[in-house]
Length: 537
Image (cartoon, rainbow, N blue to C red; front, side, top):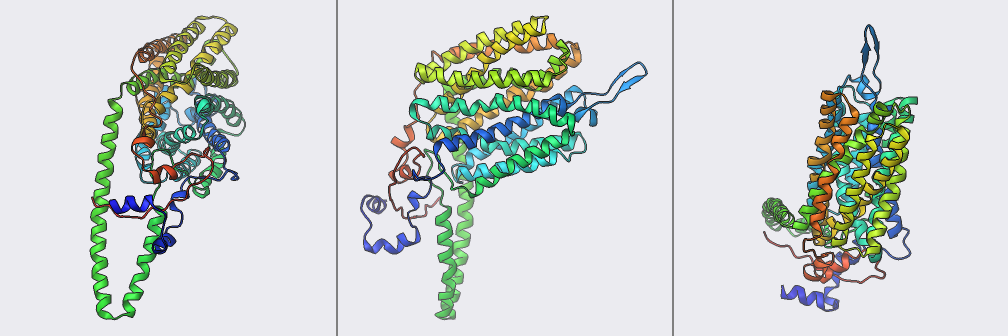
């Protein structure tokens, strides 16, 4: 250990040159991007925004009347054939709601897995893997032939999205200017309502003119370049994580593979001894790999315990669950409810237009207001509770209107306030934990808000509607859940909170790791060399 510290603290001597030749500038190649590089923080944000937009465009498209369609109906002896997915596969409202939940199941299972892998595999490459799965699964949705086939495909779409949703926000948080962190997060999360809204419109247009299957095929084509980008773009490293050792492993493997030739040239005895040595090393490596898996699992449990004991994180996520229960059902059933209550012939276009305008303006406004107030966790909770309470009251009042125009005006104002939560709620998730826990924090937040929020909400709302057969009453019952969300976030104002964004870099990450994990905004590079020493289990 002393030797390692001495090696890090002193310049390399000529005797260390053979080692450095095997590992050239390992510390500087992980994430540091020169100021002349095309790949700047703003372009990173733009790429992630487009990917996020496509993710939620897919969710909006499957909820649109053009893709989702309607059931087969009969009046007397006259029957009208169904349309879209629901008509082709003869689904009732509960089964239709299960399609939304199937997507979430994949998202929930895969999110913590990708978050844990981020500590041993480069997170940027994990995003590339996830987007590839997303692209293939979306393509297969267009070829589905019954309820179960499309349900499985939707589940795999969720698996693909999990890597991106867990890891993108920490990357943005690392590279955003300090005074604009919430605004940058708001821009990213603005793509959620915008994607849903564009998805409604896109699904309605493509589904009605070409058929619902084409909607999925076009989505896969649009995402394909970004999936490829994840593998070929220079990988980035997250703050609080040591660089991955893929390059070192490759170099060491190359060196070892050359040793047998040397052994053979010196005689049979040496070759035999080398074979035995390699066999011992192989068994040792196998035991180490088992130990590494156990160590990974043990570290995951330790991190989970730390998260669950964090009161700020728990309160934030509990409020987010209640909020997402309503938003998830709104996004899936909104066009159908609007069509039924107000006889909107263009419900997809109306809900899409309102959501895209109010979602973009509301999400941006929430981030800018929090930055103006000074982006602290306490201020974030104040903004969350106030906007959710007033916005929920407006949405509740909107469904009481008999007039379509009165409903649209008040509902639009309610959505404007409700969407202002996106930046602040994710700011709390990222800053109430230390940097190395941010991917897991985002992953478990995603798991919780879906497994207790919009996963059960879509089928439950469908079940309620099947029982009472009144979309106005169903919508009013659903909207009341905004008020418990506001109350939970109000409690968060009074909890002691500390912004832990810089905690890892000060206390846990070594100087070599800190240099290797510098965000894109930092200019200049520091040349360091770290000797690869294997650690026993």
